Image (cartoon, rainbow, N blue to C red):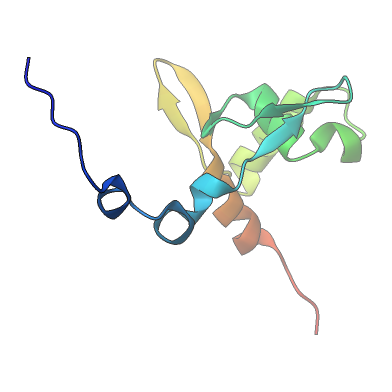
Length: 104
């Protein structure tokens, strides 16, 4: 087995702070016990409910109904993999930005 060791590895690696700034900012969700858990790039519906804080702001008894409404009426972005609905975090953030209204 022939192994090569890079003499100056700093020149070969991308500068994460400039080329990949999103990798330097951890995204976390509250875990309900006073701690936090990492937010996945593709969220389940339960993770989406926590991410959007639906349980904190909705009077609904069934948060699934709130997400169904957002999908039908507000075009909430989602993808389907293996018959499961997943919500891409970046698409959700862009959707929030588009849905945000400002009053002048």
